[in-house]
Amino acid sequence: MRDFIVIRMIVEFFLIPLLFVTFAGWGAWFKLMTGNKTELFSLTIIMGLVLFSIWTSLLSFFTPLSLTVELVLLVISLIPFFSKKLRIYMGKFPKEIFRSVWFYVFLTVIIFAGSFYPFRPDYFDYYNPSLNWLNQYGLITGIANIDWNLGQMSVFHIMQAGLDQTIDPYQRLAVFITILFLVYIFERKTYLLLFAIPFYFLFIQAPSPDVIIVFLSLVVVNEICFHHRLDNYKVLFFIACFLFIIKPVAFWLPLWVFIAGFFLNRQALKDYRIYLIPTLLLVIFMVKNVIASSTLLYPVSLTKLNTYWLPDLRILEISDQLASSLTFYNNFTNEEIEAMTFWNKIYFWLSIKELQTIINYFILIALLAFGIFSFFKKNILYQLLWITVVIKTILVFNFSGQFRFILDSVLPLIFILFYSVKRIGKTSIFVACLASSLLILTAISYPPFLKQTIPSFKLTQWMNGFNKKTLLFPGNYKIKKYAEQNIGNLDFNISYYYHNYGTPLPAFQYKELKLYFDLGAFPQMKDPTNIRKGFYSKKLTPEEKEKLGEILEAYFPHLRD
Image (cartoon, rainbow, N blue to C red; front, top):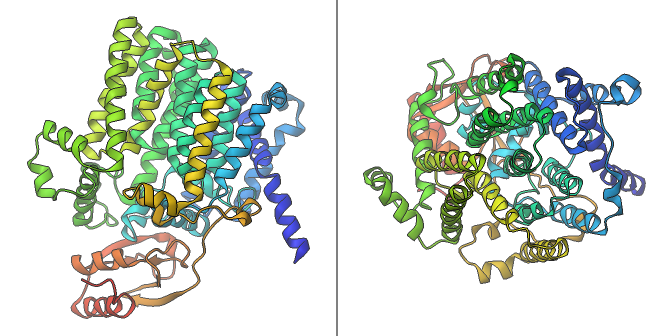
C-alpha cells in the first residue's frame, strides 16, 4: 500500500511536465503541417493543443476515448523527440524563466489552488459526466436526450477525455492551461497579464472551458496588439477559431482577428491555406453538435435539425427560458422577461441585489471606458476590438447575461487599458497579484467564513475548503450508492444524491426524471444491444409514466412537489 501511494505521488509530481512534453510533440506536428516557424515556446504548446483537440474530436466520433486510444496519442506525441527533423519544430523551454523566483511563487500558488475539491455545480452536472461518457463510449448520437446539458460536449472536454486515464488522472487540464499561461507571461515578460490568474482560482479545480477561453484570448490580444509578427498571424487566427469551437461565445475573437488581418497581414488573408484548419475546426464543431443534440449551434434551438434523435422540442424551449432566467438570477418569470424591452433588461440586470451585479457594473464601466479610450487613441485595432466586443455582449446578453459568458472579451479590454499606462512597476505587479491570489485562496480555504461574510455567494455550499491530503492527491468526488431501474428498453441508474457525476452510465438525477415525468416522454435506445447507436425521445405509455412516478416517489420523497 505504501509503495502504491509513493507511485501516485511520483505520477502527480511529473504530471505538469508530462503534459508539456505531450503538447510540445503535438505542437511540432502542427508546425510541420502548417510550415510555421515561431520560436515562442508557449505558442508551440498552444498549437499542440489545437492539433490534439482535432484528433481526439475525430476519434470520439467513432470510438471511446479509452486507455488504448490515449496511449496511441501519447506515442504519436513522443515521435518528434526521436527525430532530428521534427525536434527542431518543438522549440525550447525558455530556461531564463527558471531564474525568476516570482515564477516559482506563482507556480506554487496555482498548483495549490488547483488541488482543491471541485466546487462549481457545472462539474457535477456537466463536466464530469461528459468525461465519463467520452471515456466509456465516445460521442453518442442523441446524448442530449439523456440530459440536455450533455449536448454541449465541449471540445475542451473531448481533449480532456483524451488524457485523463494516463497523464491527467485527476482531470486538472485547467491547471495546466493556467501554468501554460504563466509560462507565456514570463516568456513575453508581459507581467501585467498576471492580474487575470487569481480570479480563475474559482474555476481551475474542474475541467472548465472558461479557463482556456479567457487565458488564450488574452494571449491572442496581446500578440496582435503589442507583439505582432507577420509569421505569427496565421497561428493566432487558428487559435482564435479553436477557442470558438470550445465555446461559441468566443466568436468575437476570430471575427476581430480576421478583420484585423486587413490592416496587419492582408497577404495572408489571400492565401486559401489559412482557411483550411479553421474550416476543419468548424466542421468538427458542427458535426459534434449534430451528433450530440441535433443542433448546428448548441444550445440555439433555431439551428435544430429534424432528425430522429432531436430532443423533445419542449426541452429546447425550457433550455432557452432557463438561460434567460439566469440572466436575472431567477427573480423574474419567463413571461415577465419576454415582456421587457432591451433597456428594461439592462436596468434590471444592473439593479438586482446580488453579488454578481457588482461584476455587471464592472463589465459595463469597462466597455464604456475602453470605447472612449479607443477612439481617443485613434487606434483602428482598438476600435475594431471594442466594436466586436460590444456586438458580442449585446448578442450574448439577449441569450444569457451571466457574467462568465462576457468576461472573456472584457478582460482583454482592461488589460489594454492598464498596459497603456506604462507606469506600473514589475515588482508592484508581482506584489499586487500575489496579494490578490492569497486573498482568494484564503477565502476558498475557509468556506464558512466566506458564507458568513458574503451570504449571496452561492458557491460556498459546494466548497470543502483546504484539506492537506489534496496537496498529494488533488480532490475528486466519487459516488458509490445508486440504484438500477428500467423504463422501456433503457436500463439506467439513479443516484441517491442530488447529482450523478460518479454513477455508472446511463445515469439520471431527480431533476431530469421529474422533467421527463412532466413532459410525458423518456429517452430510449436506438438499439438495445449497442449503446453507441444512441438515444431518441419516446412518448411514455400510461404504464411507463406510472412507473416513473413510482420511481420518483420511492427514491426522492423529500424532493417531490
